Image 1 (cartoon, rainbow, N blue to C red):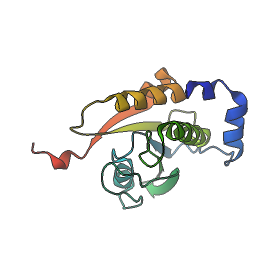
Image 2: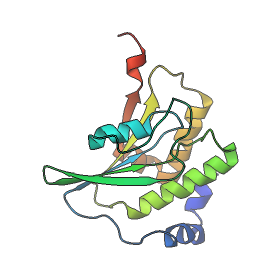
Image 3: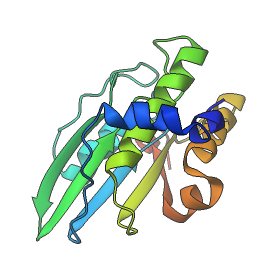
Length: 167
């Protein structure tokens, strides 16, 4: 399970040592770490936040983002940095491999994020979809990676695909 990763400092060092060490820390930087399961609309949400079609995305339910992508823009004196992560429960790999890959990507993302509260974790959920065991597993994985208090302190829930329903 992912929580064992948090308890294993050597694994954390291994993951973070392969990535850049410096943290994003400018007081005018806002970081959005997009999380959620495959096909929820994370990449489209990231593009909306940035105001451009910066991230590739496809039909719902198919994985397009295979590794973490970081894109920044400057708007009104603020640097907006969006971190698009592969979906938890990725449809292109088996479940065990997907969980480990997701854990590694989240740990890497956390290693570059500020500790000063300028981080938002949008949890992207597909509107109208039943809350399945897969959704529950996604939430459990996120709580194990971030810690329950940290996750809910920074978490914003975003519902996507609402344009497919009559309101």
